Image (cartoon, rainbow, N blue to C red; front, side, top):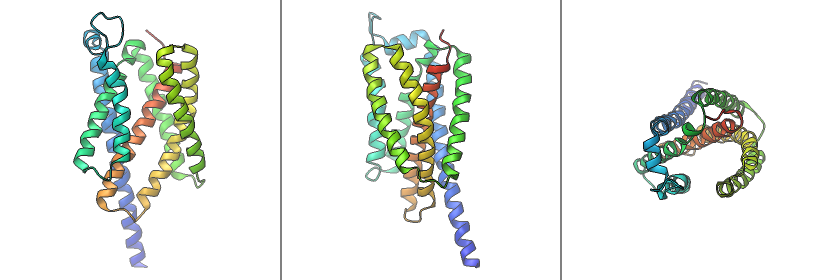
Length: 237
């Protein structure tokens, strides 16, 4: 009985450590992104130099790099983590967070500060609720998550198309879908992370890498949920 209790205590400690690391990475990324977004987004000159061409008639090459580079870096982290060192993964994670912060700076040029702040707290509440649900539910969310990821891919493609079309209606529909998709995926992803946290099959190095990936995934879901809600609830300047 004492051995069993010791094993349960050890497993519980591993789980706590894993999720502590996951949320440390997530909040660290949010901090980096938030600071950079605010610094650039509230400085019109810096924003224009980064994102507009010399004639200020359209986006600069830097805009397209900042817009699409995080996609490649995020995929690299998640697909090649086993072959990359922890130090290199952490460096990529920081670069990803910084690029996302630069990309998010545009919201300060479009929306009122009060709308950004209030929507952030709404998103945080919704995210926390779904994260708790995903961690505690006994229902297998695998099929549900797979379906939502397919919808997400369709939204991503539609979003890229809408960059060139500029349709407000399409943007609003994508945002409404996004709230449903990203809250659902938060619950699904938490369930998946719980399985990783409680599994004895991973080495300490693998657990460290997977906690970083978990932080990245939750960060992506939170940011996209926030942006979807901001598109719906936010008051424009």
